[in-house]
Amino acid sequence: MFLSSAGAYTAREYGVVTLKGSVNPIIAKHISESIADASARGCEFVLILLDTPGGMMNAMRDIIQDILGSDIPVVVFTYPQGAQAASAGGFIMLAADVAAMAPGTEIGAMHPVAPTLDFVPKDEEGAPEGPMEKKVLHDTIAYARSLAQTKNRNEQWAEDAVRDAKSNTYLEVLEKGVIDIVANDINDLLKQLDGYKLTKNGVEIVINTSDIRRYDYEMTWQEKILNTLADPQMVMLLFMLAVAGIGIEFKSPGLILPGAIGVVALILFLMAINILPINVFGLMLIVLGITLFILELQFTSYGMLTLGGLVSFIAGAMFLFDSPLPGGHIPMSTIIATLIFILFLVFVVLRLILKSHREKVTTGVEGLTGSTGEVIRFSDGTGRAYVHSEIWKIISDDELNPGDRIVVNSVSGMNLHVKKYTQ
Image (cartoon, rainbow, N blue to C red; front, side, top):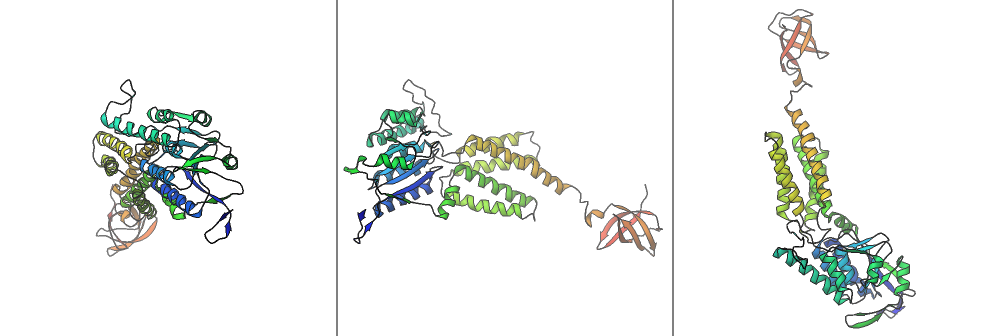
């Protein structure tokens, strides 16, 4: 129990916030607000449950700054069993006041990646050749080592995880001095944290977990929606749905559903690119690629437009997001799957729509022109005839008799202008 400002005794608490999925600005803001509120509430510590493949560098740095600047301890627990602390997750674990992992989890793979940079080692020290590659690699290594130094963790492991993209199991990093605790679950973690000593901002702290209760920090429904949208693969999917839906509606007006889906997807896409740092040139390359695919339907280029579209689309998808960490880009498997969908849409669906628009109408009143029929009765230039198994009023300058074959020249209202059919 602790004494509140009002003088009443209140149950002791620890705050819990979940980081599952890509590290992005929405989750970073949620963690920042949760840590600040937990400190204001007088929580014993904050527990971050981590399971991430990586994400955005700027969002990761924001989370780490909040952890380092927190007044109360921040415990980062890679959990549940089978979870990962890859890429950005590895950096966050290094910054934790207490780093814990569950059995079956792994950490590492913190090497920077970028479509335009070649990080393949070129010299004896394992450094890449280009100056920009060296700058990004060395800066990332220095950041990892700095975090390890701050929290008295294994600096060499931090460097290897960045330079060589090494990953290790929970037991291996425990032996290497990268993490502090291995716990089966949250209850086990609380038992091991009871009486745990650490120094935070120059002050020695002893964590007490006896008779402590959990306080969960949940995202609002708006934050959950934005967090779902703030994923590179989701942004790509929304863009493709917008292009497909609106494109089909333009080619075949009146279908409604494709257009509605396309407009909603476009609005969500515009929301998403306000959250994530999108590369405008990458987006322009994707649009160019789709345009070249459509032009292939209109002009004979012997595949050159399609080839240009493939190169433009793949390059644009690779450059669409600007993050030097894994998890902040669109996976190549997703790019290829999306490309196959676009090619199917353009060369199968749109081709069928264009073909149907170019073909002669064979149904309705317009489809009667050129049709043949049989006269039922006729006198004084008008009469009745069977056409398309229906009885129509006919007008003709020819002399017609019942049973004569006729062909429709034109349609005027509900009258058919015909002439005698001769083979």
